[in-house]
Structures are given as C-alpha cells and as structure tokens.
Image (cartoon, rainbow, N blue to C red):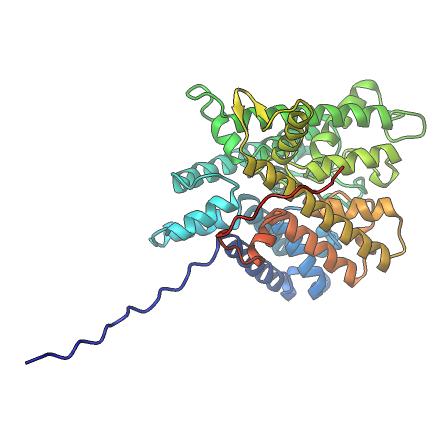
Length: 453
C-alpha cells in the first residue's frame, strides 16, 4: 500500500532583530518622551509647571548632555525638578544602553546578543567582546570620578554657599561636568549672572572632570590599567589629538581675547592663561564658560570656538562633534594622498579603507545637517550668521555654549535645535543608518573615473 506524502510543516519565521542603530534611536526617543512628561508635572516647576516645549527642550538637552536651555534651572525648577534634571544628565552621559544593561542584570534578565550589539554601538566600540564586564567597570569609574569631583567642589564651595546647598551644587556640577553637559545652577543667582564661578580652584576641578569625560570609554579603560598594557593605537591617537586641540584652542583664545577691548584684557597673565585653558577644554563639548559674558567674544574667538565645537571630543565619550577620531583619520588621509600612499599610515599600522570612508561620510553628513539647520534658523529668526551657526554647531556637537540666542528662539527654532541635539548625541551616521535599508552588495559594476577637485 502506498502512503500519501506528509505535508511539510514549516516552522514560523523568526522576526528579524531590530538593527542596533534603530534601537538606539527609539531608546533615546522613549527616554526623551518620558523625561518630557516628568518635567511637565506640576511640582517640577517653582511658580508654574513647565510648558510642553520647555520640558521637551530641557529633556532633550539633558539626555543629549548638551546644556542649552530656554529656562533658568535654579529659578524655574523646584528641588525635585533639579534632581530629575540631574538624573537625566547622568543617564544621557553614561548612555541609556548602559543603564538598561545594569537594570536587566539586577532583574536577572539575560543580556542577548542584540542587546550586546546595541550596547557596543552606543558606546562606539569595535567589538562586543566582554562588553558587560566593561559596562560594570565604566559605571563604577564614572561614579567614582564624579564622587571625587563632588567632594572637592563641596569642600571649596561650603563656605560660599553653606554646607547643605553646597552639597547639592557640588553633586550637580560634578555630574554635569564629567558628563560634559554644561547645565549649571549658578546662572541667575546674585553675583553669578553669567554662570559658574570662575575662580582658579573651581575651574581646575571642573576642567579636570570635563577633560576626563571627553576622553572616551576605551581610553579611560586603558588609562586605568596603564601599568599592565600597552596603549592601543586608538588611545595614542586620541591623547595626541586632544592635547593638540586643547593647546591650539588655549593659545588661540589667549591671543584673541587678551587684546585691547576683549574679554581677557584686564586679567593678569596667570588668569589669562587659566581662563583660556579652561575655555579651550570646555569648548570642545562641555558648555561651561569661563570667559564671561560669552556674547562679547571676539569674531576670531567665535570662529575658533565653532571649529573646536565641531570637532568635539573622542569617540565613545560623554561629548559630541564629529569626534577627534574622525578628524585624525581625515587628516591622515589627506597626508597619505599628498605623499602618494594608497592608505593612511600611523604608528606602524595602516588604516582600513572602510575607516576612511566612514570618516568622510561623518564629515559630509555633519556639514549638510549643520548648514541646513543654520539656514532654517536664519530664515525664521532675525539674527546674524555667526550667532545662528554658533548655536547650531553647539547643539549638534552637544556642547551647550550660546551667544544668548537660545532664549530668543521661537517654537520652530527650538524644535530645530532639539533635532540637532538629538542627532548629535546619537552620532552623525546613526540616524542615517537607522533610516536606511542596508542590503549586501550582490553586484559589482565596472569602475569609471569622475572629474573632481
């Protein structure tokens, strides 16, 4: 007897995992929505609740660790509102994927490969190996450095502010500085119309926190074990570029602002050097200003500040910008082309062509986004080109410095700056990759030459 063939049973197709870039975009958007909703609660404000656009702008700025604000936190936020702002800055600084992994571990949930890939992408790392152990070390290191900074600030500020108030201010500004956020609770207070105290001790503590926060997680991880390992090429490039940029920024601001009629003219030489050095460190993404008032910065100083903000901090750091890694790769690529080399070389190593293409893509997307946003601000506001460009670059680089334009933005301008801060925190290419439908290239076409240059 012949048996009828059994019908084949297909197992249901597994849903494709969400791309890491899209997970980052959605995760940050959810946090922004949650932060906005919390800040709109009646008890978060002092005399009145925040409006939806004030709450949205503040939540985006905090989670993107930018520091631009259309409110005055010390006056417009209650103590509860200031604590929520502090938590949003901390979550935005260490990265919401880091917070998510810690929560998953506390709940006993297994960290999936997709989670690890998203975490690796959010931290700007190359491979997901031992990522969970790195997360623990990173979080402990961040909290330890912030605690040390807060303790030093409390000791320095307790006579000036009183012990209890100094404790809140010390914790808030230590977190804000290390996370390169730029929010402060001094602006608007009697005696501090332009922001943080700019005495040398305060600037030294905050400047150190900003500098360490801007180095990036991979560099900090290697610095913590410098006696056991040889620094990687990434760490050596990062430290070199950071030192060069800080030196150029400090020297440039010293030269431009100590001239007659400028901000450093009446300061003694040692103070001129200290203020210029702190401003150079802060300009690359922190948003605290030692040169006060900043809107009196000279045209040459403004241009230098815009360039430093646009370059920004190291990859996988608390800051933004195109990053020092992108800047270094592009400079090496230019040098290699000038010398007739096929690929950039440094430290006895050759950089992969894909790295150079990615750096070029980051620069191209960043310029297009910044120019488009600047044009939109100019069209919808009665302002100058340098003020609009300064504001947009500050938002895109998650810096937080402003020439007073932030408080004059209309609703459309506020939304444009929110998009810039959101985009800048994720990285220039993250949104592009998240929205693009990436497919493997199955066909290779013949090469053809195109005239350029």
